[in-house]
Amino acid sequence: MKGKVYLVGAGPGDYKLLTLKGLECIKIADVIVYDRLANINYLKEAKPNCEFIYVGKASSNHTLPQDDINKVIAAKAKEGKIVTRLKGGDPYVFGRGGEEAEVLVSEGIEFEVVPGITSAIGGLCYAGIPITHRDHASSFHVITGHLRDDDKENEELNWNALANTKGTLVFLMGVANIKKISENLIKEGKDKETPVALISWATRYNQRVVTSTLENVYETAIKENVKPPTLIAIGSVVGLRENLNFFEQKPLFGKNVMVTRSRTQSSSLVEKIMDLGGNSIEVPTIKIEKIENNLELENEINKINEYTYLVLTSKNGVDIFFDKLNEMGKDSRALANLKICAIGTATAKEIENRGVKPDIIPEKFIAEYLFEELKPKLKTNDKILIPRAKNARDYLVNKLSEICQVKEIHTYETVIDNSKKEEVLELINEGNIDYITFASSSTVTNFVELIGKVNIDKLENIKIISIGPITSNTAKELGINIYKEATVATIDGMIEIIKKD
Ligand code: SAH
Image (spheres, rainbow, N blue to C red):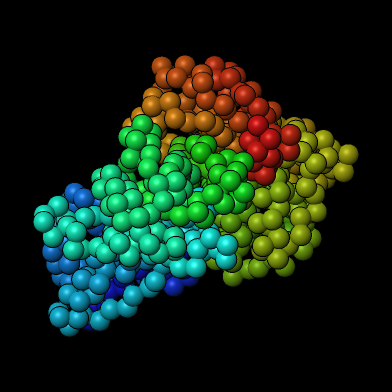
């Protein structure tokens, strides 16, 4: 077995600013070596047994010295593993990617480099600054701000050339040396009034940009407490930011939204929040546990011809039901004589994904509405199959049973997921959460169980968004104030409410 190393540019931070090739390298990796500049959410795309090695900060104080990073990468590759080394931005723009590649060559290890969007260009872009512009800059220069502090300092960079080019100057790793940088440039003749932007955590939800002039930038940085990672952009293109600043104008820019859903279901909400410029913090409160060896379900599927209705109430429910059907060597044709009802558009869509069009989708996505819609249609000799969660509400089954025969089968149960408890409490205590979303009654109950009843009053200053009336009621009963409820009880409905807010 021969190992291989991919040096992958992970882009400047925005989750979607990664190449397809980079994503592929993450998915096939046995080992991922990463540092603080690579968005850690990429690790979710890795294989289940992938090993993660954190090699620390990319700025001045490494937790692992470069030599050790090189050794780790080489050793893992020699074990025959596929190693993906995720580096912020582009692997060859500073960050010592070239040295890592040289080590691999000298060790005879196969490697590939996947370029990434460097923060020097992408970071400026998200700050509303085009790095070149016909009326402003015909070249750009990317420079290390990590200057030597011995007497060779002035030999390292040609300050005279930098001061006299009309191109845009971008310093990386320069926060500690802003004073030296601005003084050297002014000394060599650069206009004191040249606009400067300090761009921190570029392309992330917590991007922060402060602008100044070359003469005042050091004071500005001190006053505004600018910290790495920060880009220093110098040149008249900085002025274009006023017009071109699309990113910071996104509706959820700078907002932290806690998303409480089961692991398997949160992705569409999380993605929508990110696309709107917000930071979504996933809190898995529940996990779905499928009921294994479900003989009861098999029995009813074998007698499916006796039924006239099939009611499916969640995406998980649909998946488990159809998987079982397939496992038993049957397909959707077995359901040809049934009317199929779906609670919720997500449930309906999942049924359609299985090649079946649901016959009944209630106007509002709760059991009460389904009942109202079914009531006039049902006859006493109808027979309804409801495969669903063990801890679901009794309402639907009870009401339907008043009219005809109903068989409820438990196909899965939801259990508390405690894995993020400490982290969640810490975030709430820090007071940085703007919204919490609840997409079902059970997530509310489970969230409260997770944080503990004693901590409910800590939610007071957070805007709580509920998907619909049942969820809101559960919250109220537990002493949680709902800030707003979605008009349409869907994920999009919740997003709409937050956007308007
Ligand atoms: N290879 C990286 C640069 C590594 S050097 C790239 O191509 O972007 C590390 C420096 O990059 C940091 O000190 C900072 O100046 C800059 N940097 C990287 N990502 C950044 C970000 N998201 N926001 C601001 N600066 C960033």
